[in-house]
Image (cartoon, rainbow, N blue to C red; front, side):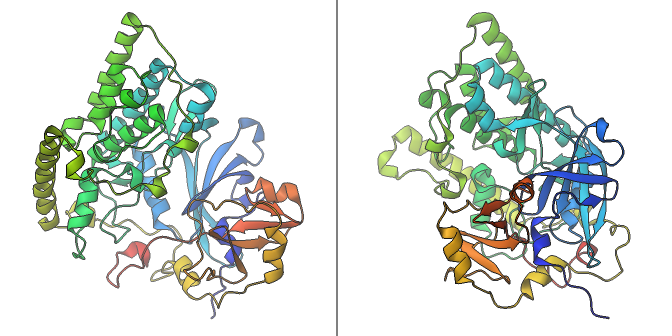
Length: 466
């Protein structure tokens, strides 16, 4: 029997108004590379308030099952509570996993800083809460692996910082789901040891970097540096206080500690939380408090445009700085060489996750990637291009499929525009279009064509892919 194909439109999530088991999708809040986050309510219990429902954009996505496992292990006031999970069946027959979590009404961290111009003490408190959240995660033998300002919400009701999006996370007994040397994450927040490992293992097919708590601490340091200076650190970065004299000396010192080249020098997340709390109390008693006057994010270098994390040319460095980098580089090379030749898998990492409920034995195998591979040649409609080019072009979404080198999109009815591929959604209703987080231009609704960044698994892939 021929399997029903998954429509291209599902790659950007079901529309608002769809019922997902007992939940009703009310508003689309965020598109990502692998999922879409909705504000939803339980049918018949709308007065109980909203929840966050995160829907996978690829059938049977094992990343979602791993996120469920991780969130069931970790409990902290600065981590959203897991409320439920399940599978939504599309009319085609394909099953899409979803997760229901505590709703956090808040502002992304960097936007919050721009809106409120926080004091040093407020920044201390935010970092303490995030460090405590990481400490709870690490105590559960798990790692977040994508700590950054975009994954932090500052809650409106009480100002608490909440660490979100554990989709890239990993825990001790979880199965391996990706086949690249480095785990998923954001390059600008990558630790020096991870970057060096990637370079040294470039020609090794079996090399795999095992991210640990020190990587999360380093990413928190990048987040803090970006928060108080408006810039990202790379190379022998100046202290935060050099870039922004309003940064408290103790805060500047602790941020540099998190950014130490040596993983051991950063300390654990719990130790950092203690140090941050002590520094905040000292600032309150001795020097009072002052606002940071953080510069606009528009003036900072975005992660996509960051240069490689390497030191400046030797001629521009003092002998002290040169000596420090030579020593640090030698230590990292020795560490990375040991890691490259270490066994790629531990016994706990070979443990395989159980198949999701209702999944047929032996299939389907990553339907989203098969669907993308089987798409017919691109269809280009010049009239559509002319119609929407009259208005300012929409900005691409995170994880949106880009055109190829010739400026063409691979999917059916996809059109290239401003560095992204778009699909027309069949509605003329502006409100319906914008509720889903899409773009309405010239009486037409355009949704981003999203795709998986994962490489196809080898033939010996674990059961998660079968």
